[in-house]
Length: 399
Image 1 (tube, rainbow, N blue to C red):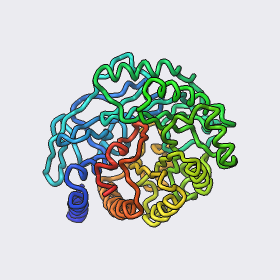
Image 2 (cartoon, rainbow, N blue to C red):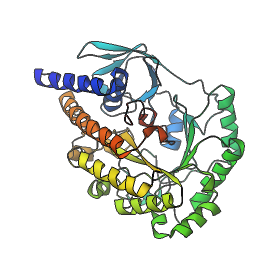
Image 3 (cartoon, one colour):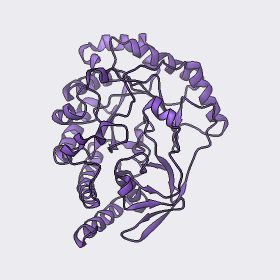
């Protein structure tokens, strides 16, 4: 039930977002945070078998006011979205509280059925996983927000198949702005780097101008290598053709990372890896998740991290901000989630209060992001998972 108090909180939050970012971007932010109650009667647009294979999270591509489509989570792909104040009927994104609506339409790519490895997003990002399964699950140290189905390793795809599917996308007029190769495996001694490197080289041979990003599990082993050894490893495995390395910090505070990403290395190790890669003239994109532990990972954490990243990144490292959410199939839907204030039975009142807190954090972070000199439009990576990479520049985070 809405009370006079939480109604005012929600109104003030939306109004201040609109004032800061503009109406369209504000609705995208609200939709990414709350999710939308999909009333079209359609199920997830992604094949369930694809989700099981890759771990990617389904969402609907919704074209808002004729701008770039954004992948908004629905009740099928986000815990709590079934209680969202935002509804979507196929033509309008509607706010039940303020009785405002904005023109929207379902934007579904007509992807050829032969495309089974690549996952294209409406904005032009293409994601793929070289192989799936995470060894951290065997040790009980998997990330709590991960949806990879298990520890078993699914065989790597063939480079030739990736190029063939890219050709099919180009044939239907879909022009990718970047392609990201992900894996679900932590790297050990670099053997997985060669698998991704073979795919990357084949793509670049055929599409030399297509920006290419690569993430190969936690790059923690690189922190133990010298710059010369890193350069030798990258070149030997064929990853020297990659435009951007994804070194995803995820959580800034080590205490938060230990609880949500127990298998990932410390922040100092991440910074050491980024420092070495940028010294070698490689570009780096690093994901930072917003909305986890808002009371424990506040704006000052992000500001301090931005300052460090700007110092060691030498203009070649760019943070990529994502709005985190609990996805069905991840551990965040377990009773454990109650301990950090994100119980799936949360009332709408609690969601609204968190949105208000998140809005304040986003305002501060985005302003400092610009002051430090980061440019979100330079981010050339994305996993087609949450949709935030499609709208970072759209919410004026770099203005």
